[in-house]
Length: 255
Ligand code: 13P
Picture 1 (spheres, helix red, strand yellow):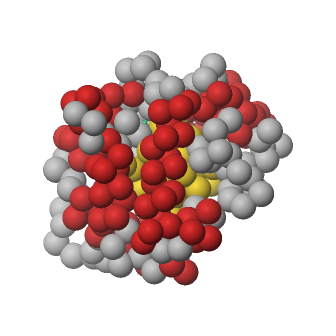
Picture 2 (cartoon, rainbow, N blue to C red):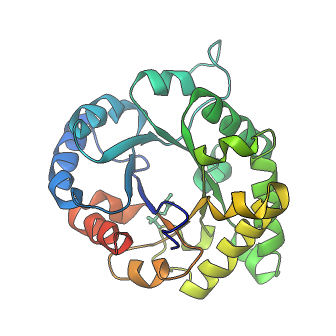
């Protein structure tokens, strides 16, 4: 992390877990544990839990995010939620391009870009996920692939809106597998992302962007991952469902 120039952000991604009542209980448990955090703390929750999460987090340092959004403002898109609706519900962040959306629900680099643009235009901070499959790592194309995903996702995002962008590097092979990238692997790809941002925008602009690592980040490995200069935080799946584990990661990012 390089806190002198950019924010450290620890974000939970609850995925398809927790009812509204369970949301209230978990956030109430987390609040005192993360109250003295010296980093931004975000919980991205299922749509159905947003109202409960916003209410439970009121007056605390926890911000609420969603896990996806549609790119249109409104219309005949059964089952979808727009960025404006999220803002109206009290949401500050939204994940775009998570690999589970890309793999199981047909999201592409192009739709990830549309969602990201809509999120930023609505005033949300987008946590844009990029990352390679194991086959792609084995083929030696990780750096090019992640650079390309980053470039396409940010088409149409002007430099003065970069403060509403977080990039999350999530190697697909590390998600939910317990197989974390090494700190060196995370650093290498986060640096590639930063160089790509420098190329698209400017070196100074790139220095200010928060780049997270995600993929089996937990209470035991967060310190080591966050010790690398270009790893500015984490997008946490499984460990964000346990207040004690999540708060240890928040503490690691607060050093
Ligand atoms: P895990 O931390 O469960 O591996 O999930 C990571 C992730 O996908 C966060 O978006």
